[in-house]
Each structure stands twice: as C-alpha cells, then as structure tokens.
Amino acid sequence: MIREMTKPDFEAFWPVFHTIVKARETYAFDPDMNFEEGWQLWCEMPIKTFVYEESGKILGSYYIKANAMGPGSHICNCGYMVSEASRGKGIASQLCLHSQAIAAELGFRAMQFNAVVSTNDIAVRLWQNMGFQIIGTIPDAYQHGQLGYVDSYIMYKVLVETD
Amino acid sequence: MIREMTKPDFEAFWPVFHTIVKARETYAFDPDMNFEEGWQLWCEMPIKTFVYEESGKILGSYYIKANAMGPGSHICNCGYMVSEASRGKGIASQLCLHSQAIAAELGFRAMQFNAVVSTNDIAVRLWQNMGFQIIGTIPDAYQHGQLGYVDSYIMYKVLVETD
Image (cartoon, rainbow over all chains, first blue to last red; front, side, top):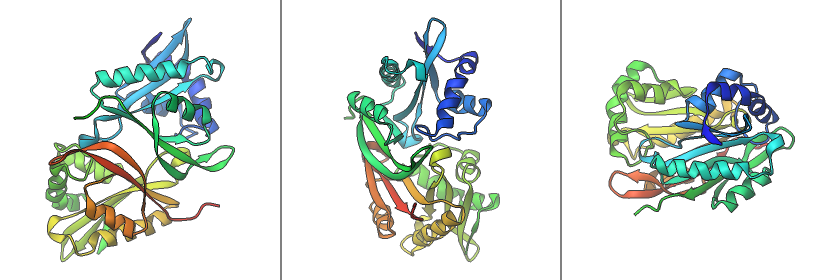
C-alpha cells in the first residue's frame, strides 16, 4: 500500500498536489509551479518519495530528504500530502510512521519540519501526537491564501538517541 | 569595498571557504566539497553573492537567497564568511548590515538563519547585537569537528513590519 512513487504515479497525483499548492494554506511551494517543477521538487530532489495506494488510486504521498548538508546531514526532512477526499482516515499518520522507519533505515537520527503553518491545526496536532515538538515559531513566516501572514512552527523529533 | 562576487573572486576566496567548511565548526556544508560545488552553492544558487574587498584582497563574503518558496518567499537567508586573519575587525557586521539593506531592496521582509551553531559564540553574540533573536533551538543539529553533536539556533530578524 505504501511504495515508491513513479512518474505515472505523480501524474495521477498531480491534481491533488496542484490543488494543495494552489490553496496556499500548508506548503511553501510556488503556487504557480508546473508539472515538471512539481516532479523535480517532490520526486527528484528528495532521496526517496512514496505513495499511499488503495484500489489503484494514489491517495497520499511523502518525500524524505536530508534537511542540511555535511555536519547537519543526520537530520531528515519530510513533506506529506493526502487527497482531500481521503483525509481523516489515518493516512497521514501511516505515511509519517513509514517515513520514520525509512529515515532510521537511511541512517537519520532525527526528523525536522521547517515550516508547519500554525493555522494548520490538524497537522500540528497530528505531528504532536506522533511525538514531534514545536522547537521554534517563525513570526509571519507564511502568506496564507485566506488569512494573510501567519506564523510557522519548526517541529522536531529524535529518532535515534545520540551518544 | 562591498561588491558582487565574480568567479575569479571565488577562486581567490576558495582557500578561506575550503578551510571554514573543512573545520566543521560553523557551516552545514559538505566538508569534502570541491571548488565547483562550492561555487554553485555559494554563488549560483543564491540570488546574489557579495565580497568584502580591501587592497585587492577578498577578506569576506556573503550570499543572500529566499529561505522558502511561494508563500514563504518573503523571508531571506544569508550566510557570511570572513577569513581567519581578518576577524575581529567588524567585517562580518558590515557584511550583515549590507545584506539587510540588499534584502530590503529585493523586497524581503525578514531574515532567518536556519542553523547558527550554538558553540559559535562570536556569531551568536554578533547576530544578537544586530537585532536577531533566537527563535528556536535544534537539539544535536550539528556534528562539530571537535565537540561532537551540538545544538543549532534558528535566528530571525524583522526587516519590514508586516501589516
């Protein structure tokens, strides 16, 4: 059900991706990006990208990449998307659990989200329930499509204790 | 004295750049990066890169880029380097002041540093003196060349008040 994303998968998922980015409520991505830019950002720049598939439909996706280079490369970063029709069914939780397992496999010691939009209550609560802490608040970090400037949170979870 | 960086400038500055990155004390850059990778990272990916020149010598440099895309693109990010022999002369302060003016010119509303290594006291104090606040601490974010895992700070300064 969760497996690596192919380009045909991203084609199938593009309407969801495009709608989420266009809404300017959750992602700091260019709302006018085209398909190829989306593919690059979501699937080519990360280390790996996965889909949540059910009955041949792509209901969600996430990527994993290093959050920094060299001496900062032991912390990973992930981004998750779930289609609007499939929300509230625990798919984001499953993707996040999967990503933590993959992160550990890839040798990462912690996971960091750099900009969780503060008004995205569902995401904030979900990540908190999964053990992520808000370690910082960036004032007016996000130009929300409906609400204007709102804060973003930096969230963090240790995956493997350092010595 | 402060002007945009050319490739010959970066060639002249490379020994400083390489030494700083190799030391693994301040930058989350791959310590083994080569010249071309350094050029890309420092001069091609950013919007602009500047040098501090004195008597024909490049004593310092900084880059400026957007810290995020789309709805997060009003916050910029900068990185500064000063050659070891030229420290303690206020060059970093001058570069930072210059970068704040350039940031405002480019339309940015705030500046964010994503990973100021907590043991880099001189930098932390300097940015605080220049009006930056620590808005978050990332536990064990940096594998310091001498000290092992140390925290990093996220620092932030408003440049233009949002409405």
